Image 1 (cartoon, rainbow, N blue to C red):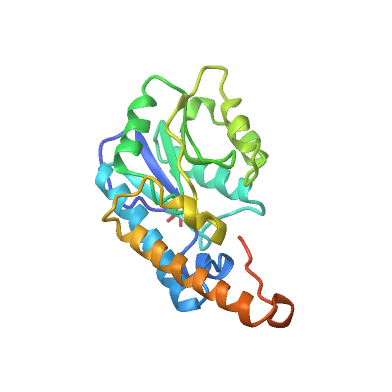
Image 2: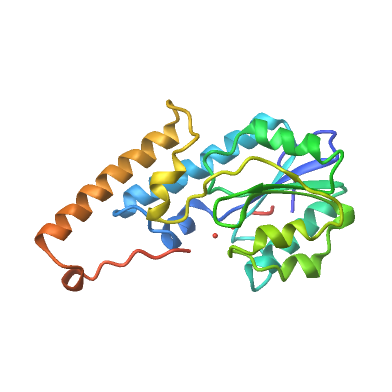
Length: 231
């Protein structure tokens, strides 16, 4: 594992997200592969641009270096590796919340000076950001949380006996159903918003055509779901 940038900071960011190519495969949100590749490439670009703006040191953990069988094991191992680099606090983010801003990450960093945990909730009972201090991190317990469920936000809060600092909620982006809500809060000029809206328009047009001319039984359409490079 190597650090991407070096700054004198006690806090590091951990980007825990799959590569665009794998994300496009396991989350085929758009109709065509070309559109889906573009979508996840832009999502990864956006979160990296956001992280760069914070000026904090950061690590990337994707499928090429993750260790463990479950999502929780992989995330817990990646988090431990960052702490082992000498950092006292880590802010974990993914690539599926386009509303995430550098200001929110910086607010999380400042809040970690007075809180063991800083959490950014999504609207599904999960978290788009987890800020955690080394003193409250328990690798085995962290790995066994009910990740990717509506229980995980409350379970994260329970990791600390002290009150956690809670950031404003954001929408995440993991299925076609998330299209309409994920644009809320994005800038009018956001490139991600333009891409999402264009794909949404295309998909809705396609669905109306299919409903009119064919049946899903004949065409057999299937939209699947599916999540996070520590170098």
